[in-house]
Image 1 (cartoon, rainbow, N blue to C red):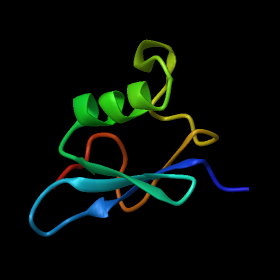
Image 2 (cartoon, rainbow, N blue to C red):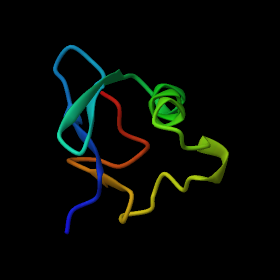
Image 3 (cartoon, one colour):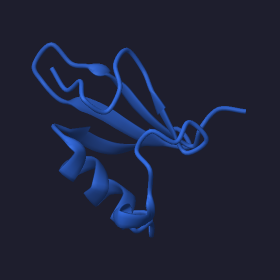
Image 4 (cartoon, one colour):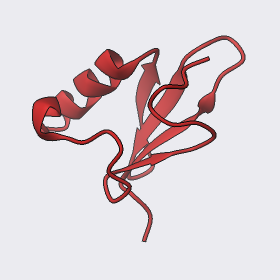
Length: 67
């Protein structure tokens, strides 16, 4: 089973598309944007480990890669 949240590869124009269960949440340019998307889903970003593979699947680079 894949993680419900996917952070897609960096875009040539900057940022990374973020989806949750196949639904586009938006384009994140850093962890603060991702935290806001998680907040909108009802998750407290302070309680979330961004490197938790059961929650977030990072494609072509982890939380430190945005460009």
